[in-house]
Image (tube, rainbow, N blue to C red):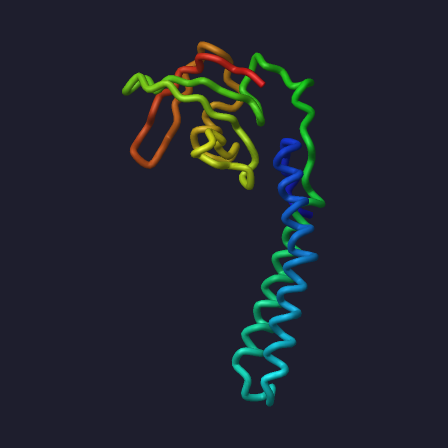
Length: 157
C-alpha cells in the first residue's frame, strides 16, 4: 500500500489539475504524434513511430503514478491543527544560532516543497529536526555541513 501523504488544498488542487491535463491534452498530443508517425510509412523501420509509442508508455506511467499519489493523498484541515508545536503545514520562524539568520518556512509534503516559496518538505533534515518542537526550543539538525542549531521563534498556521 502507498504511503499516505498530507496536502494543503492548494497542493491537492494542483495535483488534480496536472492529472486532468495529462489525461486530456497530454493523451491527445501523443495520439496525434503516433498518427503522424504512422502516416510516414513502414512501421518496422520508423524510428519516429517507436519514439512516439515509447513516449505514450512513459506518459501512461506518469498518469498511473499520479493516480496512486492522489489515491493516498489526504487533505489537512489547517483550522484544527495545534499551533503550540511544529507539525506538517506549520509556518515556522527560526533563527540559525550560528549566523543569527532568521528564516520562515512552511512544512509541506515532498511534492509541494518549493524552497523559493519558503516551503520545505516534512521529510527534509531541517523539518525532521523541527517537528514536535515548541516556541523557544532549540533544534539540533544534522545537515551535510555538520550540526546546525535552530531556535524556534514563532509557530503559526
